[in-house]
Amino acid sequence: MAKEIVGKIKLRIKGGQANPAPPIGPALGAKGLSIMEFCKQFNGRTQNVMGKIVPVVITVYKDKSFEFVTKNTPVAIQLLEAAKLKSGSPEPNLKKVASVTWEQVRQIAEDKMPDLNAFTLNSAMKMVAGTARSMGINVSGVSPF
Image 1 (tube, rainbow, N blue to C red):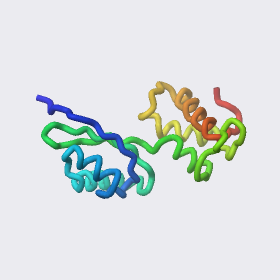
Image 2: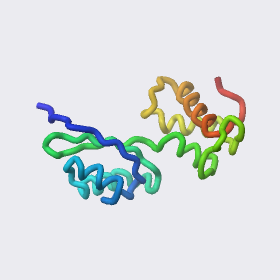
Image 3: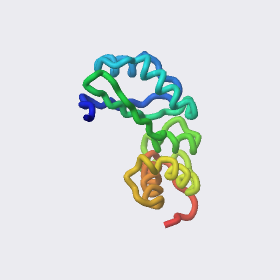
């Protein structure tokens, strides 16, 4: 018989750097979970993406056990890294702050594809390009569509 789920917790944590400090400690402590056990497991699974933001969804069960799923780095953060920026434009419709190529958009879309609700790479690329546009980042080059 399946365990009874009592909640889900969504967090964004730097890969390989989980510790009991906020926001992890209070979020897990409120549900009665072992904070150190989560930190050990999370750090072990995310050694390959050290320092990058990793979204995680933690499923909490009635018997105080848990399991979690890590996702890929958010598109906005990957776009900032590709464009070598600290943040997007404060006025994205008026002030463009950087430019990325369609090849960079393709790489980000391929990386993020399992987490997106897109069936084709072209539709995933359009989603990534839309995120870039809303951040004030131009997509340069000839559109593949």
